[in-house]
Structures are given as C-alpha cells and as structure tokens.
Amino acid sequence: MSDDDSKSLAEAGTFGVEITFKAKNMGKDKFIDELGKFLMSIAKDVESRKGGLVGHVKAFARVDDGFVRLNIVDSELGLDVGDEIKSKHVTGGTIKVMAAVVGVDDHHVEEIIENRIEDLRKVMDIDVVEHEDHDDHDHCHEGGE
Image 1 (cartoon, rainbow, N blue to C red):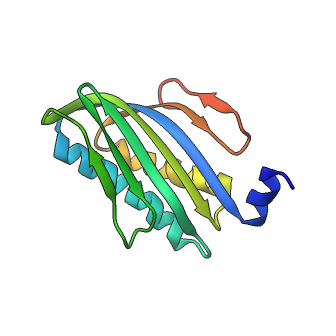
Image 2 (tube, rainbow, N blue to C red):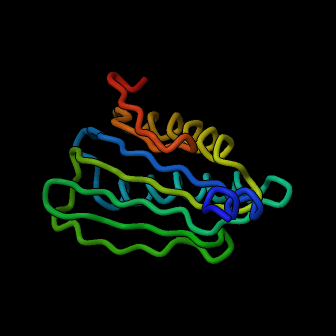
C-alpha cells in the first residue's frame, strides 16, 4: 500500500504555503497575536467540518531579528508559541504555514487556508510565494495570486 493510499484511507489532508509579508512597524505582540488568530481560525474551520480533526496546524515566521513558531493540535488546548524575536516591532519577513488534518481532504484544507489568508491580508501586506498541494508540486505566485 502506498503512502497516498494510506492517506486516502485515513481521510487525511495536508497543505502548506509560504508567504512573504510587510507590516508597517507592527508591534511584535500584535504580530504574534494576529498569526495566532490566523492559525486558530484554520483549526476551528477544520474542526467545524463533520469528522474534521486537527493533527497540527503550525507556522514559522522569520523576521529581521529572529523568529516565532506557533503550533495547534487542538483548538481547545490553544496555541503553543516559541517567541525568539528580539525587537519590539516587526516590519516584514516570511511565514511558512502547514496543516495536517484528518477528515478533510487536501483540496478543502487548501481552501480553508487560502480563505484565512484573506483575513490576514486585512492586517498586513501579503504575497503568497509558493504552496505545496495534493498534486505534489509547487505553484509559484507573483502579486499574491
């Protein structure tokens, strides 16, 4: 049995994306809070679907002077945050997001994340650099498309 067959039988879905962002001198705490809301909304969207269960939803953001990593395994348990950003403000960087779930297929995991990215656009300028999808190839995007 192939990995794809196992994933299909388990009704598992995965999706990952890399984002570049710019923020106008956003406070570090606000940045981490917004990223946390973004991940939590993905987790809650997955859990709201019949049979949807989060394996993990995680993000790693690299900024000028450090990084932060956030992880959710269950929205009821909240976020696990590892903050290694040295300054009090964030102006830009990259964010890698990955979700692995059960009960929601790849296509719908991708749809959930893309919809939540639109919410994140309300607080920072975002460009989706690339994403990995269920077809096992990367798509490169310019101008956020």
